[in-house]
Amino acid sequence: MLRSSTLALGSLAWLGLCFVAACPVPEDGGLLGEGEGEGEGEVEPPGDGDCPVVAGANSVCDVQDSASANAVAEGALVTLPGVIATSPAFGSSFEAGVPSRFNLYVADNPNDKRGGVLVTWFADAGLPTDIAIGDVVTVTGQVSEFSLADSGGTETRIDAQTLTKDGGNTPLLPLVVTEADLSSSSAEDYEGVLVTLNDVEAASTGQFAFTLTGGINVATAIFDYPAIAGETFTSITGVVRFDIFDGEGFEVQPRQASDVVSEGSPTSTVTQLNDGTVTRCADNADFNQCVVAVSGVVTAAPDFLFDDDERGALFGFYIADPANVDGAGRLNRNSGILVTISPEDPISVVSLDGYTFDQDDNHAFLAGAAPEVGDVVEVTGDNAGRFGERALRFTSRLKKISTTTPPLPALFGTGGLDPSELKGGRPEIANGDFPGLEGIAPSATIEDWHGVLVELRDVVTTTACYSQVNGSTGTAADFGNFLVTGDVEISDSFNLDQEFSGFWFADHVPNNADKVCTNLANKCQDSRALGQTFTKLVGIVSVSFNVTRVNPRGSADFEVTPGLVEEGSPAANCP
Image (cartoon, rainbow, N blue to C red; front, side, top):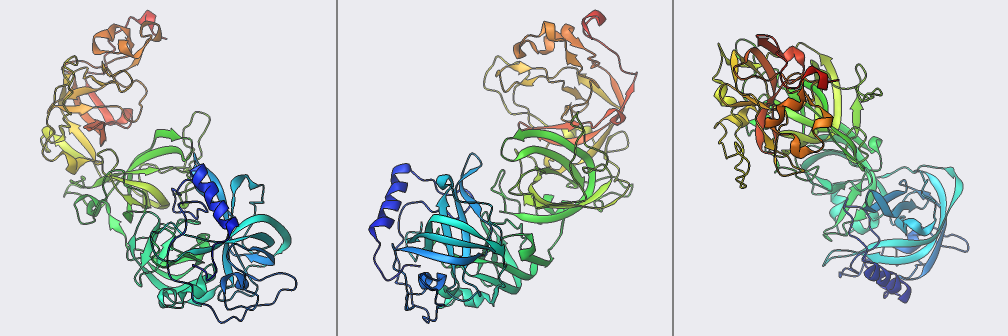
């Protein structure tokens, strides 16, 4: 918080450097040591002045307590020998996934009020970053006060110039406090201190923190725990920081998984996520906005969505509510949902209990390494849509519970609902050069079937090649889609091996502009045919570029009468 002495020239020069360098605001709610200058607030109340005496140097308490006989003025250079790391060294202010600053909490031994402080330094300073909780270190640096808030107090920091590891590891015990302690007039006593809160409950969640029922925030700058509103905790341990962004008090920062001891969280069903019982965030909302836990049966195993340099590969799989079935055991409306997961993501994935996502050289998952059809799983993630599709995103916990026979797919066609309920429509394409891409309205109830495994019975191909816009060329292209009875579009999100649409003979299609429906002579193994009858066609209802389609998962999802007919290119052109 704001100290009683004036800001020294050294601290002003340091802040000026950040103005010149346009130092970034942290994207992760992290502990950035650069920004827009001092906050304005009341003078920090002194402590009791009872600080440990360190021969020839200072204690952390001397920095935090202006009543100490050896109090250190803001802007002064201070040396803190033999202090204990109460957090690991952790990054903040990330640029392209790389931290531009590092941060570390240190404390006097024993742990006590006014005995903890944040140490921060630029990533290129050459200081050690392999510091673990309990490591003994010596720090020399300048005392500063910092805030990004327009009003309120500031956070006391040590802008490190030197940092050495002294050997030894002595983790400190936390001080047991209450939420009232951290919101009272004496809350300043705990800034930078390692504390434990017992028997608390999460009231709400947010992007950078979750809030307890007593009003204290639990921040995610060091360790991101995916709390759920209503979740109760035996204890939460962490270091206390001043809220430098809003200037509204103090929050606790857990440092590792063992710091958060949960008694259990409320669990929702897939149906409750889809029927409005549980509020869904807007599409592509920031993670931790609408965290829920849900259980379900896997109906489609993971498939590759895209690769990201920072988060790793993103996969998607579908789960269903096993209780939301009709009298024949077939899935009903609102019974399915997409789950997206980045198994290597260092930010959002916390636990993959029972799975490893190991793959072979052909990128196929090893047996049992990833969710398979029939697995019963528990998933924690954000109840937020993805590009118009109902989804659980930013998966933070995935656990295999058991295996079972999955529910039967919802039935359309002979003996079931009208196939036109699955009409996915398409948005109007403004450019008149795309024949067949005029706006087509979807069925009124299509969203009820998003993510659901369905079966079309005795349907006929009404359009053998149904083009869509190629995002790279802006022209109409053949992506292997076709229409069946009821204007239901069949697609290939699961990248099947030439089940129907085949593949292009490369020598005859040098660029994407040639991949059009009229160029079927240069397709190999394209077996789409007008009037082709499917006695069975099973697939997942999913959304791509605002169009809802049915996507078979493999050859077992097709039964065709007559059998597959190879059309298109001469056999000599095909491998």
